Image (cartoon, helix red, strand yellow):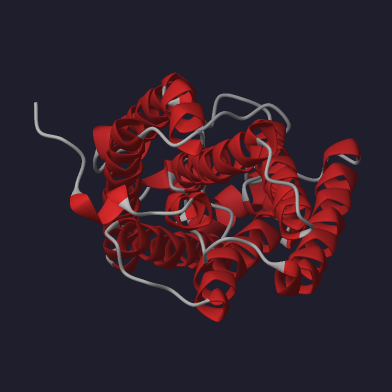
Length: 300
């Protein structure tokens, strides 16, 4: 079995940890201020998400995952602040790395569910693309999540200086990053297909509130998808060994994530995803069962 690469042999522990982090380098005291600012923003989004959930102004199954993603990101930033303050314990470092991994997984799972619900009117065109696609994404996210949990041992060994564990961990991160990037691209294909169907009026009129609502849903889902596209592309490039400055870390990694979370938390999804009323179905020209009274009419 080949020995470790010569480039690792003369590494100091500080250089090793800097290389291990792969997220803007080893946090220094200068990172306390921006990390604290981003942490406060996430706390504000956490409050907004909890408010919408308690007032039932959001799809609970989707926003619970967004809520967990925000918590993971807040914990990761808290660990980053602690590391910048001088803590170099393996537990703090492991917690930061795992939270960095789980947060985007939860956020992307929420996006897949949102896409599936938002584009329900187009299922008749392609049932797999607009219904079972979300299930495939959930299975993929679960697989990456389990894989990351199994990698905790490698992570702790790498932090303690095990070179082979470091190489294995780096490979796992690289595969996971580019897999999520490819999944986001597929989500973009779903959005483009729905847009083409919308333009050609190939959709189920009975589950559409109005064309304006459909445009708003598409814009919201597309916005989140583009932001996660930028985030995962940045993540994949960074995992491939490209050096990124601290400004690049905050602008390319955290800023798109915050805007995506804000789009989840602040848009009135409960209105955009609501079932159309009988009057809206009539306005759309949807077929109505004439045998039922208006208050109980079902779409044929």
